[in-house]
Image (cartoon, rainbow over all chains, first blue to last red):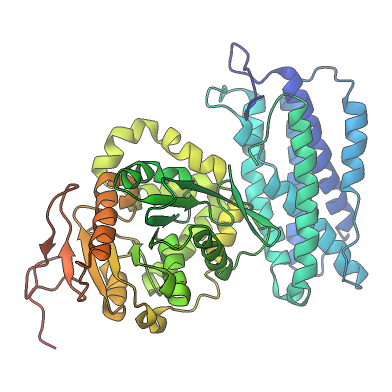
Amino acid sequence: MSAFFGPLEADGRVPPRQQTRAAAFLISAHGALARQFALALPARFDAAWQAELNAQFYRESEIVSLLMRATAWVPDLALSHMTVSWEMAWLPAPVDGIADHPLAQAIQLSTLAHAVHAGIRPAALLPTEANASDPFVMALRRIEFESGRQLQAQILFLKGPDLLPFRDAVSAALERRHAEVRRLWRETLESIGIVSCE
Amino acid sequence: MPFLRHGSYRIRYELDGPADTPAYVLVNGLTQYSELWGSYRDALIARGFRVATFDLLGQGISDKPALFINQDDHVAVLHRLIGELGDGPIFLSGISFGGLIALRYAIEHGARLSGLVPMSCFAELSPQLLLIGNALRTGLILGGTGYLQDLLLPMNLSDQWLKPLLDNLDSVKRQGWLVNDVYALQNLMESFLDFTPLTPLLSAIATPTMILNGEFDFLTPRALHETLRVEIPNSALVIIPRAYHAFTLEKAALTADLLARFAEDVMAGRWQGNKQVLIAPEDAGGEFSPFPAGYDHLRAIPVQRTAT
C-alpha cells in the first residue's frame, strides 16, 4: 500500500487500472452533482445567485467530459457493484431540523457538493514522478484546482446569514456528508492499493 | 500516532523527551504542520526539555471541521494538551497564528505557565495586516494552497534562504500542500472574521514573556510586537537580526537556543523582562545586545527616540 498512485508505468503514467477506478468514482460523484444542479436550474433566472448554479452545472459537466476522454480505460468488473453503491450515496438525504423543503433541498445539494469539492483531492495522489504531460495527470490537477474554486459557492451559502439560525443542523449534515464521501473515496482507493493518510 | 479528543474531533499530537523534565509546547503557524518543529525537538530535548507539538484543528493530520473553526477551540485543545504534561514547569511558544493562540492561552490560563514566547505575533489586526490577510485569503480561494504558499514564501523568508532553493521550490512546498486542505485553511483564516483585539487583555499576562520579532518581518512588523512589549508587564522584546516572519524555519538553531536559554533563565530566577528591547545574537550561543540607548527601535533607520 502507498499513499500515492503507482507504481507508475515507465513513461510516468498512472496504471490504467488505477486510472479506471479513480475516474469512475469521480465521474459518478461529479456526474451526480451535474444532474442535481441541472434539476435545480430554473428555465429563467430571477436571482443573481442562480448564475452561479448555472456555472456549477457546466463545470461539473466539464469534469465528467474531461475524465471520459483523459482516462486510459480498461475493463473492470468490480465497477458494476461499486457504481451502484456510489450512486445510492449521492441521492438526496434529508437534513434534520429544517422544515422548509426547498431550503432543505438546497442545503443537501450544497453539503454534497462541499463534501466532494473539499474532501476529494485527486491531485494529491500523484507522486512527484508522475508525467505532467499525461492527460490523466493533467485532468486530476485541473479537477482539484477547479473543485477549490467551485467550493466557494458552497462555503458562501452554507456559512451565509440565511442559514445562521440553522448553523448546528447545517454543520451536522455537512459533517455527515463529508464522512460518507471520504469513506467511499477511501474504500475506492484502498481497492487499488492506495492507503489514505487520514 | 497519539490523538487527543476535542468533542467529536481528533487532534494529532506528539510528546518527546523525558516525562520528568520541564516541557516546551510549540504551536504551529497557519500553514504549518508539527513535523516542522523536528529540529526544535532534538535541540530542546538535548537541553533537558520535554517537547509537545500538535497539528491545530484544521491542520495536518488533525481533524478538519468542515465549516467553522472557532479560535476558542484551539485554546481548549491547547489546554487539554498541557493537561497531559503533568505538574512540572510549562513553557509555551507559538509562531504567528500559533503565537496568537499562545497569547490567548496565557490570558486565560496564565497561572499554568512558567514562561511564554510569542514569535512573529500580533494582538490586533492593524489595517495593513487586515488587508494583507484578506488578500492572502483571496489568493487561497482563487489559486489554491500552492498559490498561498507562493505568496508567503517570498514575504516570510530571506533571499539567502530562498536562493539555493529557487529551482526546487515545488519540493519545499509539497508537504505543506499535501497535508493542508483549501477549505480547512480558509476556515482557519475566517476565524478572524469576528476577531476581537487582545490588547486590552495583555496586561493580565503575569508570566515571564520573551517576544521574538524578525528584524525584517514584513507581515507582522515591529509595531505589532511593540503592543505586546508595552502591555505585558514581565516582557522583553528580542529582535532577531536579518530575520523575516518565518524565522523559526530559517534560523531554527538560533531560535531553539533562545527558547532554551529563556526557560533556563526563568527557572534559575535570572530572567528580568523589564520591558527591555534586546537584539539577539546572529548565531546560537552568542550574546544579546541591548538596543542602542536613545534610538527608536520602531524605526528602520537610526532615529533618536523623541522624549515623551
